Length: 326
Length: 290
Ligand SMILES: Nc1ncnc2c1ncn2[C@@H]1O[C@H](COP(=O)(O)OP(=O)(O)OP(=O)(O)O)[C@@H](O)[C@H]1O
Ligand SMILES: [Mg+2]
Image (cartoon, rainbow over all chains, first blue to last red; front, side, top):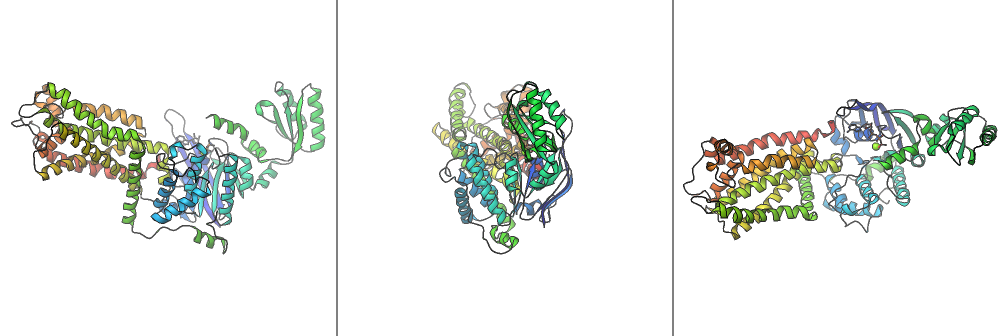
């Protein structure tokens, strides 16, 4: 059964003195009940906008969306009763303690004073914030703040959960813990839509991945389907120095079966190939023959990174560094 | 994670695992939501010392500075300066206090906490109720502090108990209604800095070119006309009348508002509420359309 459904969503922004931005450009999406769908896409692809439309925060210019059959645009109140949401940037009250924040959310879900407090206590424990719970959020680290926000999304154990980049800024332990929490919820029947910059996260959590670019879904399927769709094997090279990149590109283009994609400032190159072993030895021969020093060379099966790279034309990790810089 | 049971079909399990709201009427929920958001805003007064300082110390400072510095220089026929001054300080302080509704609303939007509220099944209008209620409490505290300080420096309300209470109520009610206008501006402008600077630029002249600190009859004609029609003058004059602080034999201005200050303020309160309560609620509900 389809639980989250978006169809033909369009949302445009008209910044002053700048051309119109089509944040969503006919985006459609279906998430079956009890499954996890990950939205993957470069910065500005429209992931956050999609989540905001589905969590009733913004109205699209056109298109429709429903959660468990309830129209998001016509009956946002009913939708809010069954969703939990955590946005890309933590939405917490800086001047309340961690515990008070969660208690307030419980009260505003109308759980009643006693149940709201109980639930806040449970979530504080679940998110490993017992020691910090009575401190004002203003003094929290970014990751702690983030965890309070995520806990806020789980207050009613909602049937549908929207998480916009839930693990960005979390340390590895918190990230693994959150993955466990999400997996537990899903095994209990919760439907989850999350966005992520981490392909590993999509690989691990998502039953289905929708790759978004330019405000529309450009590919969807399971991680394996997506990997298969970009085809065959890869040869990956790492050069000691990145100076003569155009030479490398030429060689890879000659022996590969698709476009060579550089990353890591032109030091690392990946190219799809038809016959892995043969292509690898030819490429290594040609590259060393051209006088370039290799750090590392090998064959591998496509990863979600390759999918991302091939479909969106940019490397995922470059986006991550861009984002950190921003 | 222990809250999820592990028997039954997926949807049946979900149905039992999702926490259900306690039963309640719509109006009960609205009042509850209003109380929760009011409490949140009041917590901020306790947690952020700047606000407390601003709320409590600034009025004390104003009362002392004005009554001693201006009091030494300004001669009010038929009254001592402190008795004349207090209504002006009250009005100025609560009007400026209300601007906090605007900057706080803009700040909350900026911080994203409003987005959290807007994904919850609460009544959106309750966020505004909480905002304006919270600022009413802050203004109430300011009033108490100012009255205490005023008492120490010799201010006395010479009217009846009823008149005194009516004066306090009128000042606070006006400030409350003004809070709704400021909340609307806060949501429209979305920048706490702009709200603060703009309200200072507008309200500072408005409170000074009025009868708050000097009798307006002594002003040059254009300013005098402005001061007589100035709504702040009506508020100040109303408070003076209700506290029994009108100087004996003081002339009454020609403007209708100067002749009917209390009625003017009551009409002002009614207008502000009638316009800006629905407008603010509609603005809040439309936040997602931008
Ligand atoms: N309020 C706004 N005003 C103007 N443009 C906006 C606004 N919000 C989003 N956009 C634009 O819409 C596009 C999609 O933005 P969105 O935030 O959905 O991207 P995203 O996929 O979440 O990116 P990221 O990975 O950086 O979080 C971007 O081009 C962005 O600049
Ligand atoms: Mg985003």
